[in-house]
Image (cartoon, rainbow, N blue to C red; front, side, top):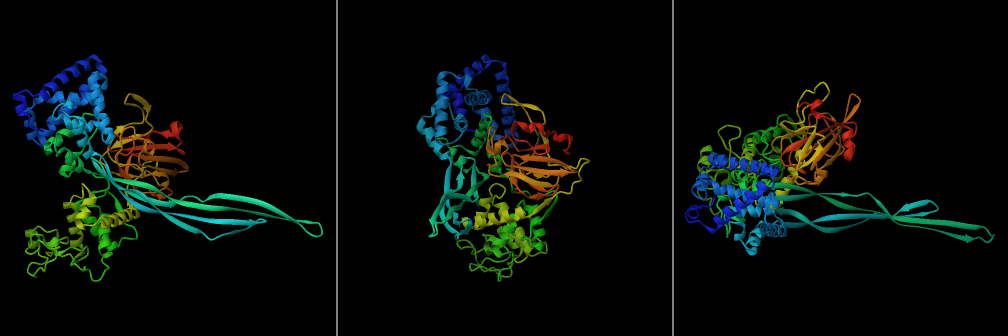
Length: 623
């Protein structure tokens, strides 16, 4: 928090306004009735508990600043104002509504949440202290920024000509065009990278024609010829597949710049105020490197992973061991190994700049940039034998080299050492927070990042993920682990009551999701952002999902797995019971990481008719 000690001793206009507004809001709130008041006070109490307990346990000093500066009472006033302006506009006066609309208008102009502007301003002063120009300046630093690239789409066509029913096709002509698409978007709280799946659509028939011409012979008979034809064409189209990585760099930059100049502790306070508005920031976890990123840092898998045919079997166990130790996904280690030396098949494994070994380390990166002569070079110095590949050298100069096989030698020419060192490098460069940044630190090239990510995706999708669970008497196994957060029953959200057709199981992002029985994937969606929000219509509200059709002892069932962070299967694919088909997430209409699991007897019906086939998963599937 900003130090407000002086403001408390000499009452500032901002504090006076805050106190006045706080009293006014509280009085109006109580007049609106007990229902709203209970909601309001419940949120406030929870927020206070989070603020006081969280800061005392984790930080200590911000609590002291609050108590010594604005005091707990004024802190409560600020919280009341944030909540009132964000969630309870009905208790605001006309002037206060106008102030709220000013914030909304500016936030919408720059495509950011207006609640974020309110939360950011609140720890500095009152909302009216900032004019439009100041708010626009801060909003412009938070607004999304996209970088574009071109992709190539192709078209094919051929013509068909028929005479009296005998048809011939012309050769296929091809054309192409460059289409600009978004490569990645930097938002205030995340970076969204976009991959594109390109495929041809169906052949379309156009330009049809038909005519009949008749001629008369000398003998008076008539000969008629029927000529017809058409054009067949098809075009490539693309599906945009977003991958989100939480990244609060823009958030930091914006609020640590004038007029705010916030410290890290102040930004933790903004996080608390923003949470009061029914929104969420994971800035503190991101800052401390403890955030859970879907698809990364898995460390281990509680089952059997069978690599695809692309991965040499002798290397796979090394990737898995490094993953377990450093929390770097095995398929990224395999991808780097492949891109660098084609799985150690390049001979010699020494680059023209001096990088060496299975994953191509420069001597200074391996032994440490503090080694004499390294500074000011591209990373190559001649390491004498007395120091080369020695554990004490690497330790002394803080290198990335690792003795992965514990033989007393730290060598990039030993596969265990090389793979462990690669995992060590990625982990120390923030793999758990931002995979792209970690790969960039390994090799400073955007092209390299794209290559590694493409192969990582390929290796991950080629692998099979098997959990050796025993099915219950009905033939089903557990879909995932976690706590039940919503059952198969009526529930009320946002004042709306509806029957919940499935079972919600909450756990961390990326928690493995398994097929409860063997079957065929009938439908999938993998186009939604990994982080959704309540009311999102992406994927019909399910976000990223999988529907699998099963046949158990002659009875057809279907299961739905929704709000996923990642998918390991595709439409039409046959999956085995217990295979890991995806990762738990919060895509679509969701307020937190969970699996929405549905079970249907027969094929799931669409829309409201789905209730006719829905079964209670708790009565069939082990939980």
